[in-house]
Image (cartoon, rainbow, N blue to C red):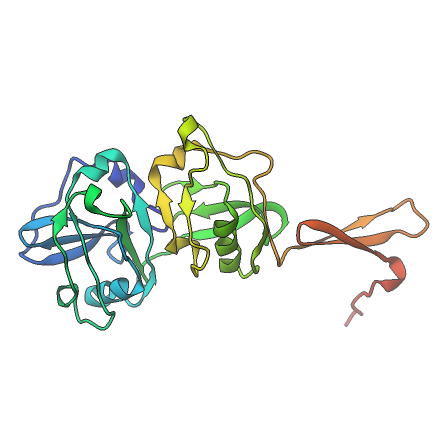
Length: 272
């Protein structure tokens, strides 16, 4: 992403162009805005193309980042790409132990089509030597509640609803604990998209950037009024009952309004 933290949108559409053929065996991270983030492009066995995202993980990414001199591997997103991008060959069966000096010391499969790739997705890498996208929750009364927003280093801002697993990964990445309330995402444009996800997580990922992004749905996010995500760390306070003989401070913790604290229980810092 800009694919996620990657800068990939403009160049993904330019699928008809290819860089000059590299040496017999070479690799690079492409379409990410800098050389330390992007889709993994490989030249091997006389062919050049991207890599199938099956079994894609930090072991493989660690080898790639080390080989490129880009520090350590941070994230390993995978992408479901547009149909025109899916026509090129993919290197399948890439598996590393994480200690190899280069990708060529790993187990490499054969070249094939996207149909031979179980996840029907492509692998990307984000190394510590690159730039990172930012994420947050907007308009919810605290940093731990609101509409989820992912702001790319290059490219668009993604603001789509999240289901429960994805919301929990998002909340944990913000340091806000698990999600107490997920949003109800809506995709517009086709009845068959009901229940489809722009972002898909297992729920155990350390970051939303380790999840799968479906580029086909990015322009079809519809944010209704129930798009707010509320994390366990959300607290919100307000003054209520100002005309009442005993006004109080009402504290919201999580998705529900909490207790009203009488004025006599408030404590104020002493001036120094």
